[in-house]
Image 1 (tube, rainbow, N blue to C red):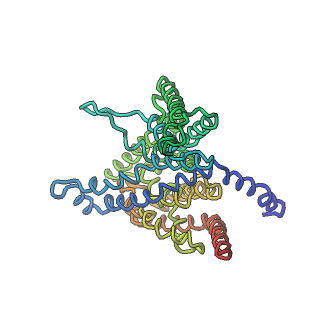
Image 2 (cartoon, rainbow, N blue to C red):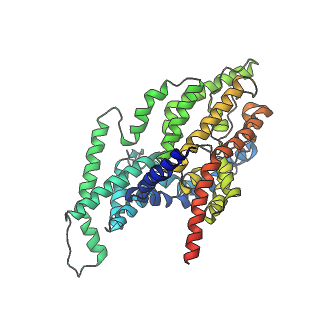
Image 3 (cartoon, rainbow, N blue to C red):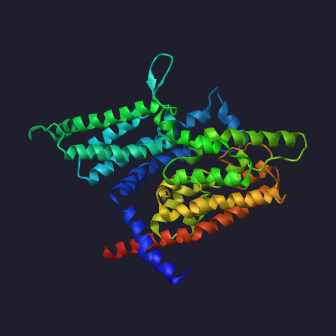
Length: 431
């Protein structure tokens, strides 16, 4: 890097992004989503137990003593991992209101209510209403972020305009704060209700469908090509950087295409014919998203074995287990990668590099194509590479990709680790 470029980076670009990162709203986003990290890690452990990728174990879990133990074991996952959107909106609303020195608890309650209001409720046969759990987890995270920021800003603005019911000083603070939130909360919910009615009058049908609606057209035309694979993964990674579960967001559009190409390979494999497709569901699960979206297993390995900062060393102990089983929410939200401009480049570049290498080696016959066998997505790398291709070359390719992923993440990881280490040293010196 030239001296001119280095000066621009250090004097202009880094201070600019640092200023943005320190802004009130991004700090609230960061702190709010961090609140979900313990629940994500707890849920990840139970998810691994329920979906451990050994067929005999899965058969045992599916029906022993007349019960589906995989479902039972995931009860804690549903109560922790799958409410990250709900936790995030609560945390974001609370921290943002706190930064304005407004009653944070009341603002949090309004934020939660506004978030629930965006979700279309379901009705069972008895007529009881219930909230779909998938709308409370990462699928609803983007809506949670928007609601947490903008509805809380509206709430705070209304408080500052004194649109509140003021109680006498003799009234307990808890009662006084609840009445103070009455008008601002009602106006905030009224606004969300009107927006919801407007969206329901469009082809989008509901607020949670907005993102999928706009992505459906472009991604519906993706074909079995290298460029198509690039487009899919680029969209997935960009969505994740904003806290949206990218793979889930586009699964309704992309998965039918990928499952179809997988089925074609399975039929060709059974008939003893050459496999027609490279880009399949197992291609992404096993050779692109190694460790999860963003191919973060390489980063997890670096955090475990190359960290100097105490924060990263502690984080590494928590994330490496889930990462081996391709569960990377702990690292995405714990590092974090979400809204982290320093990690955005490797988070996008690494899976694209995996696509290039995997596609090229399969195209030229150096590595076997995926045979049409669907390997559970929690299967650790190397094992999944062999099973999905029915050939040792698949496992070898994954080893090479992991080494490459470590190399791509290395410089960005070292920069973040060095910064945290220096802060820790400075804090120790002051203490």
